[in-house]
Image (cartoon, rainbow, N blue to C red):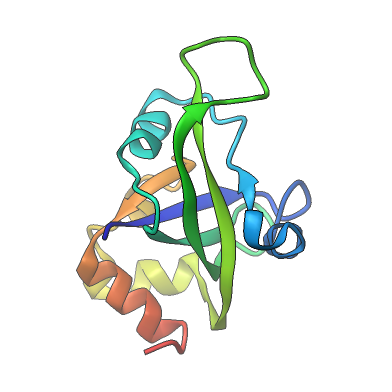
Length: 138
């Protein structure tokens, strides 16, 4: 299993919106960055991730699961763009802020800490364990 981080502005599409989609989840559409798209191409059904609220809050808020592997993004006719579908699994007991991540030495190499603009990012096994610890899930 691999781990990921999905970023979204909560006033556009946030945790509550994803929870409302239920078991079927939602396309993680609209991504127009090649690196983020390539990350989604590597995802497998059952992979887990965290949903990160960007701009407002700047914090990891919940655990998500990939429920459909990479497929054409329905929001464009441009075949270059693909997406995965994700569903909400469980909110974090404690939100993990960007400031906390930056202050945590064990997360110094995390993509979020070093490139907070990338909308879909890999998370290493060790980073996932730290996020779950900080989020009150371990």
